[in-house]
Image (tube, rainbow, N blue to C red; front, side, top):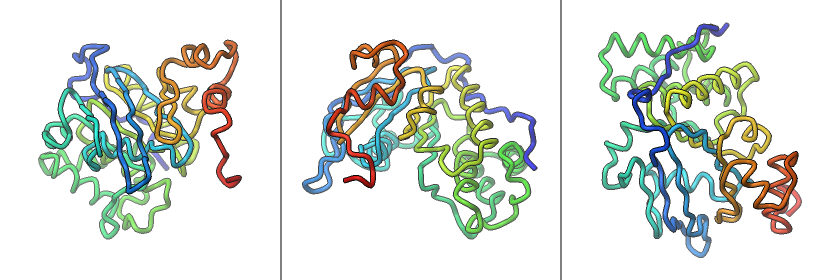
Length: 271
């Protein structure tokens, strides 16, 4: 059973982070794969202390954008900056400030959950005892202690996502990039993760949350960008997006999305 005791996940230096400082910027950011334009000249700005939602259907360009933002995929054109730095020219500096939890967690399958965490902690220059302590805390908090000494290859998708998030949180990053972090996780796990991320944001850290889940984003996010077919269709608070779409105050985020995207949207399986 998972521990109910919360783990300290406050970002390093987050309390002193200037609220409202721009921490992420994309200018005319573009990525092509042959003739396919996956991300098409998008402009985005994210500020510290935001729970920023990056929403769109599968294939909209969300994951490609996150990979460019975190230095995993070079843009075809345009530029991206994280804390004012180019993630390709200053990779170590950027990686020291961010945590990344991808949709397909890149774990070492032959290592146990505990060994995965301790290995990442040592790469992050934790002392051996500190690595063991922090790993045990995160495993307990995420309800993985019973599987801590099993190979990651035996983990379910939800367990793998929890372990990947734990790896991303080890060094208490200032900004988290999350690609569909809640899919495949049980309701108790989702609540624990939401509470931890909300606590980070309250302390001044920033969450960049990519997902197709409109309902969850509506509850979590302070500001939202809607992307479809590689282009930004709207960005702002929910109320600002409602105004952009010409909808009444009670309209849901899904209503806004359908209004802004219109006839271009074909639900998956109906193409």
